[in-house]
Length: 192
Image (cartoon, rainbow, N blue to C red):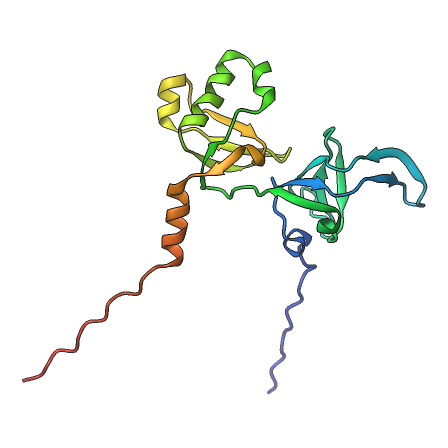
């Protein structure tokens, strides 16, 4: 009797992992370019150096492209050579990380008063990252204390990664997890 061996076929490598980016990261364009169609003809759209783009989720499971949001909100795909054209200016915090707002974004002034209060609360209190939404914004859950102060249930804000900073408590927890000390071994008992 012979055994048949099964070989595990690897799927295509995830371009996000290969490029070193994750959803919610903010990228700055290093040099301008003109968008071209599939035949190489200019489409007319010119992107200027210094524009800020956002990395989005891979919503359609297209494994050879990275999805980006242009500054005007349009979707754009890119290949694994992403970091040759862009530089990462803000890394998206991972789910469960405790963050605080560095400063209020300029567009907060145009929001209703209730929304402004939620952003101001996040300026002074650490909050937990819930994830990244479809537009590449970081969803920050403010917590029960904010619910009592602001009213409502599960108050959250959606904001770009560059306005957030991780708090010391989450950094200490992460360091402790890495530096876990091994258990002490019991000394062998002496036999009589």
